[in-house]
Image (cartoon, rainbow, N blue to C red):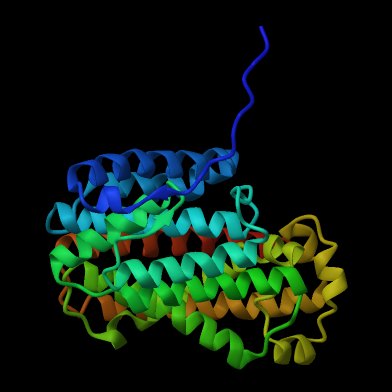
Length: 314
């Protein structure tokens, strides 16, 4: 018996879900699991170890009520879906001529929905964006600027992947400042936390540096260079050598990049040491302190041990 052809997905009317909150939440719950499963399965064992504990923590605790938990999960998994398409970890959905067009349309959609527009169409995964906006409105929190800031960084990454352009330190600082503002400050606002920006600065910088070091080989291969042009010149780094490395171990055999990497590990360690002290002095809700400890401090410390063991072999 001949199988029926699989038809490409079509845009759906998101207004129908905006008008039916119960259906919106029910479909968002399904999409949370679907996006999480896809993110892990597409990366195999590495994905399970990288994302599994964090994803489980989303269901293991609630941040002062169901609406906060909903907003957290729906925002994260919608952005995870968008980022995976930008990174080519997922295929480009039907109806978009390029990943750049896809991202620009998602930014416009996010702007419209976060501003309160409900008469819009989108992909099925955009139900998560609608659910996020609905939850934050109930909480009386406006996270539109944080959402757009994250999308701007994804758009910047897509452009770098496509062109292989080397950014300046100023460009990278602006890029990471947007991520810090959106992920850290937005997350703490969502948690209903009154926080001291300086109190979380070091853990933010430690996490940022750790991600750069962890993903260095993968990023270089796809054209994302998180080494400022000034460092490439001062350390004498040949990017062609870096791009041809098949693994981090092989990459670190190259003296110029190893010296840069060692300095970055030291910087990350210094931020982590200061973070331990500052976080112990500021007031945080128990669930927020747990999230910072489990999803940030624990991960950074584990990765730093791995980085130092690897560097000790050279």
